[in-house]
Every structure is written in C-alpha cells, then in structure tokens.
Length: 453
Image (cartoon, rainbow, N blue to C red):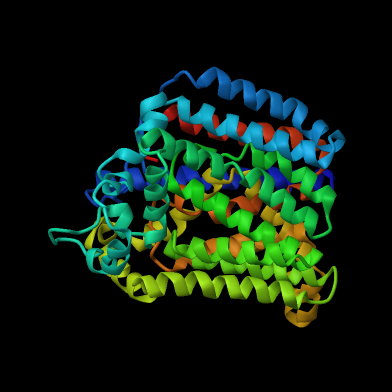
C-alpha cells in the first residue's frame, strides 16, 4: 500500500481528526449540560461514569496488548491458517475478558446483565415460552403494569430467548450470560478474516487479524448482548461467503438461519443486509451466482421468519411498538442535532481511530466519481475496500434514522467490526504503530470510564 510522506501525513491528520471529533463531542456535551440543556448521556458522548481506576484485569490487558502489538503482525504471516484462527479466537477472548475484569468480576462481568433494565431480570418471570411469544408485542409499551424492562422491550424476543435458553440448560445467572456474550462476541476475530479469505484475499484477511483481536469495541463486548449480536452476524456473513464461493448448501442454510435470527435479536440488525449485499457482489468476482446455496439461505430465512410469526410474534408490529416505546423514554430528550454527529465520534472510539484512516484509503481506492460514471465498476472492487464501506453505509443508515441516539458504542458493534476489514490498506511498516494506538484507546477508555455496558 502507498507509503509516501504525503500519504503518511494524511493518515495522521485523519486519525487526529477522529480524536478531535471525540473531544468535540465531549466538550459540546459538557457545555450543553452546564447551559441546562443536557444531551442525556453520562460522560457524554459515552454512556459511562467518569471513574479513573485500575483492577485485576489491568496487568492482563496490558500484557495481551503488548504481546499482540509486538508479535501479532509477524505471526499473522507465518502461522498456518487454522492455527492462526485458533490463536486469534483465544487471544480475542483473553483481551475481552481482561478489559472486563478491569472493573472486577462482579461489576465487569457477572453483574452486567443482571441490572433491572437488562434481559436477565425477565428470565425467571417467563414460565411459558409460547405464551411469552404470543403476548410479547402487547408488553412493549411503557407505563403499564406488565411492561417489559427497557432492553427486552427495545428488542425482538430472540434476545430474551437466548438467555432463557441458557437458563433452561442450567447456565442461568449473570456469570454464564456474560461468558456467553464474550465467547460468541470473540468470534468476530475469526469470522471477519474468514469472510475476506473466502472471498479470495488471504493477504488482506491476515492483515486484519491483529486489528480484530485488539478491537477497541471489546470494552463493550464483555459483557453486553450487543457483543453476542456481533458474533452471530459476523459468523452468518462468513457462512454466506462460504456458501456462495464454495457452493455449500449446508453453509447457505446455516447463514440464512443466523442472519434471519439476528433480526430477531435486534431490530436494527436489518441493516446487516448492507454487508450481506457486499459479500454477494464480492462473490460474483470469483464465479457465477451459486443459486442452490442462495436458495438454501433464502429457505432458511423464510423458515426462521415463519417460525416466529406462527409462534405469535410479527416483526413489523413489534417494530411499530418499539418506535413508540423509544420516544416514551429518555430518547425523546436526546437532541438529534447533537447525536447525529456525536454518534460518529463513538464509532471512532469503538472501532478505533485507525477506522477513519482505513475508510479514507478505501474511499480513495474505490474512486466514487468513477463509480458514478461507470456503475459496473462496482463488481471490480476488492474486499479490502468494499467491506469497510459497507460497514460505514450501515452505520450511516442507522445514524440518520434517529433511532440510534447515544449508546452506539455497543449498539453498532455488528457494523463497526467491518470497518477494520480493510487493515491491509495500511502500509505494512506502520501497522504495528496503528495497532498500538488501537490498544491504547481501549485501555484508556476502560480505565478512565466505568462503562454502563
């Protein structure tokens, strides 16, 4: 990749601009608070408490970061693919857990999902799952005796079903729920590179691995349900890539199940359709459409949607009620004029400032004006550029909707991970430095703030 003094200066300016946007959002949020017009987020733009601290996870987090920064770029080039994926997953788990343990076992992990607004507070009250599904929509609106708690009301029933399922198999309680979120969330370090490699670009896949292992958004993966959502969606996309390029019917079925189920985990995950379309376009570069595999994925999607519908939950009705519930709560006091750009500051905290550098290079690589004149060129774009831009498109769509104001550092995890798919666009000589900066962002955020999630 280009490594000239001019491009290096542009990269530094871009990263500095990302930091500047975060600082601006913090300053504006503080000023608005002092003026009596708060933006309704503690430690704005973050939903967190200002609380400089260290904890039992601090030395482990520093050690993991140092090892990956120093050895990661080299190991990604020498390890066989299978061993690289095993090492990536194990290290991602260690990174997520160590960051969570900076806040201690109870506050950082076991107690995260047991607070009154979280999913686990409703698990014991569900004694009849079919009845719960039939009556789910009726309990979404607030200010009624049987209203769902905030997070259950704000999501389709799939998220609650996951934690009910864990409870029913004997893995109930906050600790097991948190470890499930960590274990599934860490799959991003495998699924995103696997997607890129399957689409025919192993070099790009290997370059992305250390950046996904030290993903700054790991601060919010351990432990939040949104980390679990990110693991499910990225795995679904990876399986779709396998289905389309290797013509595997089983992979198409599995991809359809995971991607359809993800829409029942969070309403906003309908936007995962944008990275899915990008994968379909990229698969066309390798060969003709794999219609049987696509058909299998479509059948699986219909089966999942049909199952929920027959069980009594109609997604569109749930979404309509969600919009009402959204504005019954604090969202009605969160100013769109602030959050529509402050949300983007949170993206660069979650995905790290290197995401801004990758996006700049991806845009230059795709030559947008050329695409406007020659749309057919879209089929020639490589994964290293198209996947980050697809992630950006999903984020922008969520942002302008007005249904994501604050808390997007965790809500947009399933989209933010794709921004790092273009790490190979960074000059190889600079990657260790950028990787160190990414780790530093996560460490600083986690040690200065006590995050709500």
